[in-house]
Image (cartoon, rainbow, N blue to C red; front, side):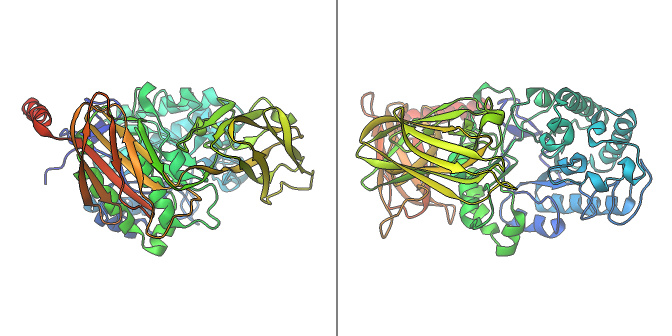
Length: 571
């Protein structure tokens, strides 16, 4: 049967994907790295999901050179494992799921993070020849055998368009080589392997990897960027990708909470998928915890989002950019937000909590406030606030280094609170909350760690600061999509809360405003709005208990004429 072909970077839009036949491809699904992959893929396809990531890992017999409980010679490939991959590829094709085949994972060459190096058959301690995990990226024999393995992978499964991309590594930044600062060796390895795969693969499919974005040399030879995100407030962070300065697509290959303790997966899926659809990324953020999805049978949560992407007209629109939206509600509530980065060097030290409840620069805020040991990484954070009436700022930390820390909080330069984390035999993991009073008006709240080592900030909460609803959206001059949801931590009145949604930047004219039920993937109500040169779009939301999506499109003769022109151009 004819297929749409292989997935490429869209020749009409460098930040998106398309099939060989020109149809758009918008990745929306979730990870299935290991386990009952063959059973899960059909359930994903039935729910409208079209994307996944599947690892070549040894603990469930998916690593060609490292099968479970079967000793292999270096360079030998296990055909039982290969047969399983035949089945996985076949099921993916029948299910309509396109997946990234993850060829390596960080644990194989790590002694610290998810470490598997001690059992790696290439480790000299196990009869191999690599004395350290670092050597994998530069050792001549390791490079030669890795290429031979990749050649076999291309030859056996390269025929299938459902292998969307070769993903060279899962989270390569956790390998020993990266931890020990051999960044350029790892970057050279990526370039070498990418060139080799492109030469061997007759269909020239996409090549990617997963790593932190602050190592551009690793991404230079990749076709698209695939960072991962774990945060307390998922919705606030998954929509923060702004790819306008990039020359290639980007979307989050993994997303989830910073801790799964107490995590409610149905809320997590909504917080990952819907706000990310409204971002400028080339695909949705992809939920990690497939075992939770399977255990609680949550596949139906993906169907409404998939239907929205296909039916809203979103895929036919180009140049949609984030921003411009505002929302106000009569009810005010706390705004609670979390740093968008984990262990990372700070890209900025100043952040602003806007009256809308949005926090500028949040995606660039590390969670680890550093002490004397690594002060240069993230020495302090200043949060600019503007309280309509006197309130409080509560900083919650959830861990501190065993060497100890000392967190000080000041308001307008005056010390308001101090919290000591005494040195101990191990890192502490007890949550601690520090509350300071903030007068009405504009103020600067500064957090600084004066102690020896790091303290981790879990969240910051400003009491009574913002509307109980928040909005994530993107727009052009005549079209917009948005997701309106209950703000994290906000208490909603019975029956939900309504608000006034505004959007600047639309052309003058008449607009249809269609509200979508995120539980059904169907339009629940419609209204019209008028935009003039002096009057931007402003509409009342329906009562919202948890969330709703909205599509705003220009109507009337001008829009019809534009539609006809586009249709003629397409022909």
